[in-house]
Length: 306
Ligand SMILES: Cc1[nH+]cc(COP(=O)(O)O)c(CN[C@@H](CCC(=O)O)C(=O)O)c1O
Image 1 (cartoon, helix red, strand yellow):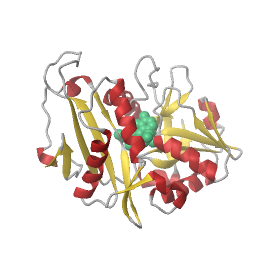
Image 2 (cartoon, helix red, strand yellow; image 1 turned 180 degrees about the horizontal axis):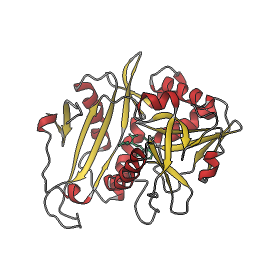
Image 3 (cartoon, protein in one colour; image 1 turned 90 degrees about the vertical axis):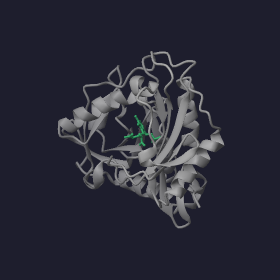
Image 4 (cartoon, helix red, strand yellow; image 1 turned 135 degrees about the vertical axis):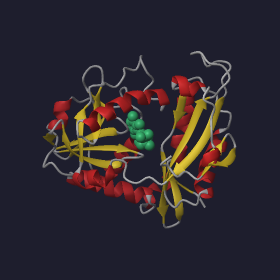
């Protein structure tokens, strides 16, 4: 395993990574019936802090509700498990992956009423999601041959394991084509989101966030809208087609893992000057200051670990 996750919180106990095992008869392994979160902790002047922990735990419970999974721990127990996992592993900064899945008891598509929901929290050190190059020069996107699924086909607002077959297929398309990330359209052909990020574009000084539609309601997207407005930019939530991204002065992607990543080209068409946009970099700087405790106005978003 490439990931060094150290101590993992598994159903209430901390176990070393190599002992954190599940049954091959787990329902989730066969049918994708799991939900998860991606959360980051950052180093701040007052020690490690987890960014918007409450919002992430709330979404984890919402995702579980969509799949009719009963998390066998309270909201606060899950929150505490996340804080403890960062603390026990002594991370200054890390990426945190809570996962809830349908365990092993019976197989067959229907998980109810037999398969217990199991819970783990792992954390590891994870740098730039799309690599340092993409931060400096901007990421190259291509429109994937796979579209984002319509709302009556898969629950895109649940961060559910099974949804990520769509993302994985799109991502593999993009990488095989020599790009850095996939842009997924919805089934009407409008821009949806990246395989693991929400999309923004900038035109004539106005910042546009792609509306929620079939996309995951990103917590970074919500934070960036707030930060962009606080920086004095007009921010609109819109439905857009690919051409509007091609015509934009800037495009960027946001997510817990991706943070704020500039986009340099889409479908081999340069965006603006073909490098990281000026407003994008201003927003990225402010976002990184917010998550590292350098902006008092966003302190309420931080949960200190010590
Ligand atoms: C499909 C999708 N859309 C938007 C986002 C942004 O959501 P938020 O993190 O709340 O701002 C993410 C997060 N993708 C997570 C998992 C990435 C992975 O490779 O796994 C993440 O960024 O942690 C998505 O997976």
